[in-house]
Image (cartoon, rainbow, N blue to C red; front, top):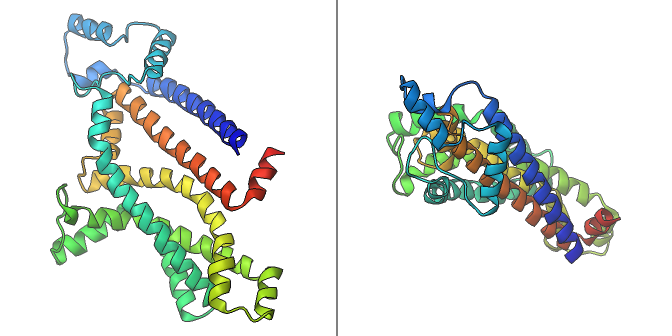
Length: 309
């Protein structure tokens, strides 16, 4: 188990290095001048001073080496869009907001999706199964910005129950969470239904039924544990999906989270902010995948053995 975890951590560090390197050079290939994006019609002499202060007057490979040295000691640099504020300070200030919305949405999506998937599988080809699958299809195909616009119109204009935009109490979280958990609910319901149907056709389940074991005990002691493995595998990738959705949702609902900062950082050519947020998002995604792999290897040791071969 220890060697398996060390090997996975090694892969994680390599992937992080590659992603940061690719992002660094891609962001510098985007047309446009970051200094010009900060201040329009800046005198050439003043612009030269800014370029020197932020190190943009140096060759790109020098900037890359300097950034990686800073990153090793945990320094994500200064924000170009918000002078005097470090990227680390902005991330630590607004990350809890994104984590609250995204975390609640993912938790609801996972739990509700699993429950609906089990119900659909156990009620195969009945009205409840068909209803759940139709809703799951709608949840996976409806774009998040369309769902957000519809919810805003119905629940803030037609029936003014919730605030349209902004951030404050729990009432500001309801609509964004609904938008972000729709896709996870649909995805987990579909995968869990297929997984349960596959497990219930296994010989050991048929043997348990032949021995007279109750359906409740078969589901709770045999079907659920083995059916959850594919869904646990999805959990790591769901984190990236939640963050991708948060970019749009936070912008639509004017939530001051990392997603909205990421969008504005790209538009403003705020290189330090884009790289810093990319480091954080990559780290969260890879750590989640690592933890998911470890949990799966504990639930099913055969997976750990097969990967070590």
